[in-house]
Image (cartoon, rainbow, N blue to C red; front, side, top):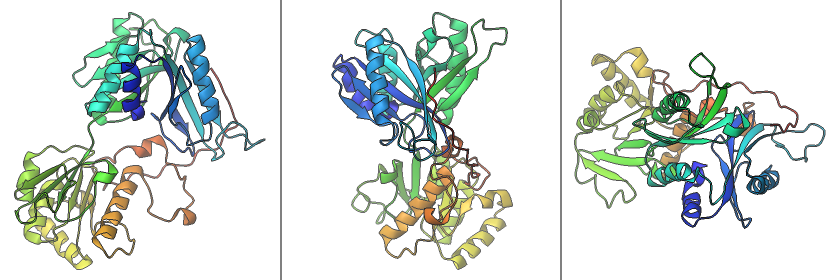
Length: 393
């Protein structure tokens, strides 16, 4: 539901009652991933989407019913072999959806408001909700911050709250949306629980060293750095969030990077590229790419080996940068770079969909940033079999 945080924050500020349906699990091919949400207020106004149209009508009805009876419900929608036009996903996937009523007088409104407000401000926070367990806990929220402080709770059980908070923080620190289980282990007398976590984190950073237009439209916080003041100007990069005049490797050593950061080296000049890549390939980053011809790449590779980079470190480098789109103009080159970043991030092949046989919508695990040391490449997930239409719990 954090994907529609701006609108929901306004509804909360206006005192509206509403119900929100959130995708909490995806199997097979599905148009939207975990965290996608549709909300319906007491007047029947709807915002958001959980499926791009496949099951919107049925989910809308679930939201209006939840507002009437005040009960959270979890439903499953999948493909129906008997009737492809039944309420289901004709693309062959399965969606698990949690519907949570948040009436105007709900005691948990403050907890939701804390998470939604953090998302609208671009701050780090996670919203955790029970999606499997006793009926009285279904949909119960906790909002967790980076320092471990939290709002809300699971029925006055500090030990259970702490277990959920600790597991939620792990997902928040990684910037992941997903689920975890709390099992009975002697410390809890409650039944086993499954908890769904939506993480709201600041946009990942894209560090651009050189001249190109790419990044903002992908949702990155874009920093352009160049040692030459004539090139690092607001006039040349009006959409950049930050413009830095400094030697690239020196700036990279002192700035923050993490496993969501994208580094684009576009100078194709050895005096900039080699010290910069020597630094970058030893830092956490989701993607590191460098521009240049194949001859430039071979020379760069030789120089990087001479300064001591290992085979494993060099494997992380995407060079020449970008996918083969036949790009000629700066705009086309930017598109080819963006396409490779997206493919790396989500485990795509870069092949035409008409020529490939992999699922169009990757499994949830493949939507996470690639692990360091894999060359930025996410293993391709196996397709899961379609399931018959089921609606449960």
